[in-house]
Image 1 (cartoon, rainbow, N blue to C red):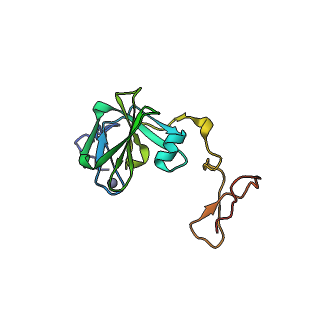
Image 2 (cartoon, rainbow, N blue to C red):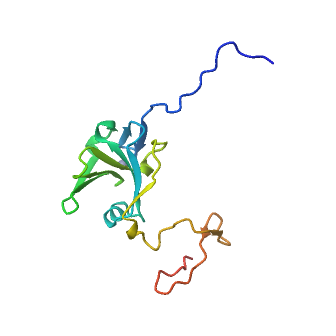
Image 3 (tube, rainbow, N blue to C red):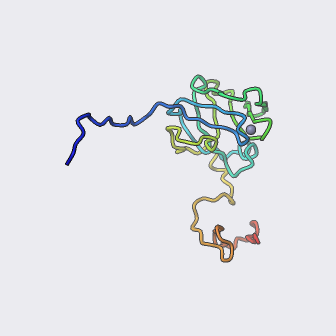
Length: 168
Ligand SMILES: [Zn+2]
């Protein structure tokens, strides 16, 4: 069996390459140094509304490890004085970009979904879990929907007073 003389270099576990992300239209691009500080799911009403989603999943980065690499002039900010937080969006496509809280001035929180690759942190934490919505998908078993390829569904639990299960 042939063997190469040169030793095979092992790939480093962490490449040190920044994690890059972007908004939907691609105008805003940014990056953070990895690993991120932490990551979590946010079930609070404010984050649900800001994302128009069941909950938001964020990656928290130290501010000094976060950089806008394109489109900075295309970012608009909404200051929520009641919540003492600022949320930034792409003014062209509306993608939520940064969530900054007055009580953590050194942190910038970025929606996890905007990153294409790994950020060095898994979202293991939940904030405001008591606000988890009954309609949030939480891993219940799903079965194919007959006649609709690619659509699966959770068989109705027949809960009285909840949303009707009819979709089609
Ligand atoms: Zn955009």
